[in-house]
Image (tube, rainbow, N blue to C red):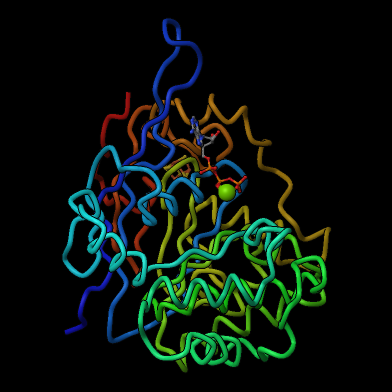
Length: 329
Ligand SMILES: Nc1ncnc2c1ncn2[C@@H]1O[C@H](COP(=O)(O)OP(=O)(O)OP(=O)(O)O)[C@@H](O)[C@H]1O
Ligand code: SF4
Ligand SMILES: [Mg+2]
């Protein structure tokens, strides 16, 4: 039996759309559930179009915002109940972010080596020489302290700086890294090297990585499991290759057809384009119904529940076996 490390159950984040009086609320993250396991480090990718709730979910897992419903637990501890500096520090050492733009991770006026040494001192005060910890972290990402010594962020390339930001994140020896679009701001030629680095960290340091991306190609290459997110909902999750090679949910099918097929003629252009984000988020029934060619009457009135089928979890009436779903208005 695997040890649950991160447990997310029906997590919800609500935001307001429109003004205070005439506005309405919508769920930027809507009943999302998944688990990561201590004895099975893996790369879990969350894939979705812009505005699907990926960053909102990652911010809840990082405790930057609170979930409005459901629960998020790390090693059995509810994130909402973490209080006091000691427990907060312990949380931060277990789960670390890697951001999209490495140039924003570092202060342009501060030396990069100094920042890393300060990070080591912060997490391990009074411990052995912090330069040793920094060197170890840099080595794990294929760099040396000499390469970044006395350098400012602008004196490193985008690829080097993103590696350095990964090194910063692994200094506290986290169990989980959350990387939100970590390769979208760096040259295409360097993307695979960063993505390969994630596989290395999983295998050598036993770190699980939540990789958030628009990019199906790198996700296909590196992920163990994936979740496809649409308007706050995980519509399909399971083994990465199984899902991307044989999508079952109509939205996954749309993403895969429009991204992976090298032959433009073979791409499926029959789907209607996405509606205004807020309009889709506040629709009744399945939030993909207005674009789905397979929609039936039930799709416009009831939100499908999660169903386990072919070792994946899907939210679509096609696979509901007669279950009517749930109300969402
Ligand atoms: N603080 C906020 N207040 C109100 N709405 C918000 C807030 N943060 C995010 N949203 C809305 O929630 C939805 C999901 O946003 P989010 O940034 O999580 O999407 P995303 O999948 O990360 O998109 P992208 O791929 O563009 O980064 C969007 O409609 C966004 O406008
Ligand atoms: S629930 Fe209906 S509208 Fe939604 S994806 Fe499935 S078939 Fe399409
Ligand atoms: Mg985002």
